[in-house]
Length: 346
Image (tube, rainbow, N blue to C red):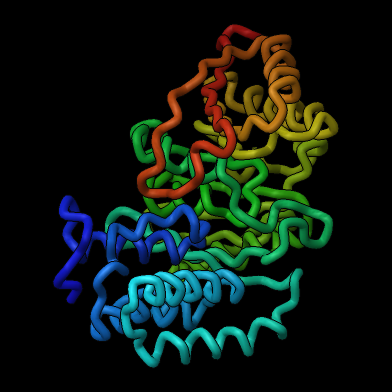
């Protein structure tokens, strides 16, 4: 398999694994480093490339967006044509088959992404194929979520065995990653928009199929799963009315996390209400880890000033380079903060 590879610094099988990893999670085609895999590729190796990407059993069962798969194959065909390399029959067959499907795909429909984790585990997420679907942007994974996952891999001791509450979980990338990789005692993934909460519940059930479902009488808890290592819950949580949610009967968080939840001034006061509630619940002993894409520096600064006024202490953390999770680190600035409060504050 892959006897030749232009990039002498990497074994061909490792380069293929990286291409597969990027494909499965929908990395933009122009950001994939092929490591010379396509420069001198045999029919046998083309077939192996197809088997690990568009013909991968995960992709067949839970397909990526059709347009993305078409663009992936189009890039391969174009490159092989440029290099005067004969293309495998399956390459064109799969390409034409996807083209015939593309017209049937609803722009607001759903597709999947697959994130390969350390330890040969995978997170599979159902996401909206549209940037905004059903009036919310919470139906897809954002760069700050991926950066937060990367940060967590370097700071496992802060999350392992802890009780964790995630605000604004979206489709669940960060929360499901923590549940799988950090073995928290309990983790509650929360959001408020009905479509987001429904998709979040589906993604938790999809990624913990062997988990035992636990009954609860709290109507805001949409699922509660014991996966053996952790208890994982999905909750419909309105920040403005968190005090009426009975969340204190479900969890007393050691850690509060949030990714890409600071982008709209209208959300700041409800978010501050939720943060204050959790810190009061824990007698100010918890920590809040916040990951943000800095789209507007003034907007982010306004929220940070609100936290300072409310007697919170803010420490900016180092953002780790993409390794396990891929995002364009040059396109926008990601910032991560650890937020605490003096225990004596009342």
